[in-house]
Length: 98
Image (cartoon, rainbow, N blue to C red):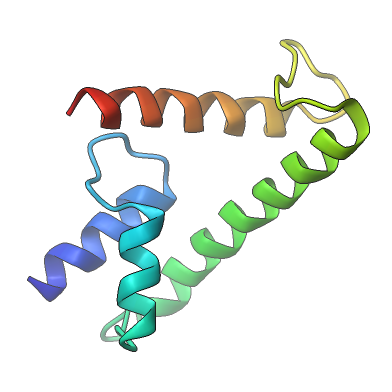
């Protein structure tokens, strides 16, 4: 079970829509002190986690500046943000469908 949670978390951070991990599950597992890594893998997972939060913060800045979260295509000022937002939307749609 623990290995499955860790793998789902890694997939979630990569934007894999097949992951059953959610922000609420992550929060619950964090609250009980869940160890997200084993045998030296936690640093890689944390890098992905940090990258996700970095993009989220960039999206927050975009929303503050433009008043919405519809990052245009193309978006020369920050195309990686546009790609990340698109990945998040696709993952959400696939997750919602089950």
